[in-house]
Amino acid sequence: MSRARPGTDAPEWFDRVDPATGQPGLRFSCTMCGNCCSGPPGYVSFTLEEAQALAARMGVTLERFMHEYTHDTPAGPSLREVQGEFGLDCVFLDRTTMPGKALCGVYQDRPSQCRTWPFWDGNLRSEADWKRAGRTCPGLNNGTQYTPLQIRLIRAEDRA
Image 1: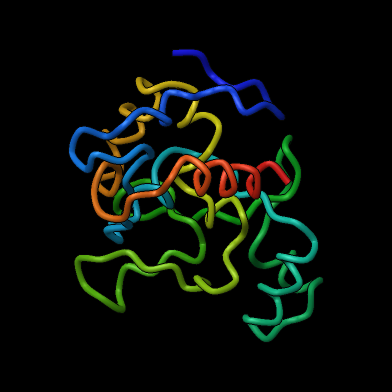
Image 2: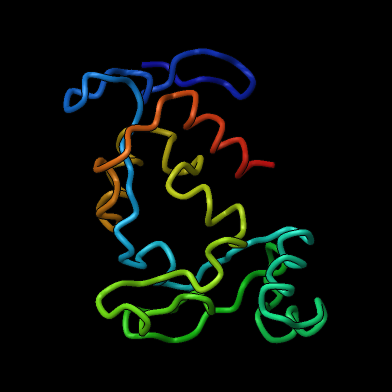
């Protein structure tokens, strides 16, 4: 099946009907496993507005937030990572409040990159890419059905 070019309405692979639901789109519900927030080194990008919201949530100045919770990377500033049991965890990943679950300590103000998981370009390029992401994310193909339009809108938010 053809994939849409950016800015077109051409069908993408997730426009097909899901045999499990009889509807087009993809299913996803977060299981609070923390796999998307932990693992090998990575980047969590954010905008200035997101940094300001996170600083306010933490009750610190923007300067202090940038110093204590971020680091510079070749891709620009990123949230810090801390060594955890499962690899490098996002500095805001909380594995203690609810044993057996991984919670985002800044959930209401998390960056767009976090809000738009798993509907990232890299996961949506092909069904094979979606399945690859599903090997580490037990929430993929389970739970809430997202329509193709919802998926495109979420993906567009990550691109903004």
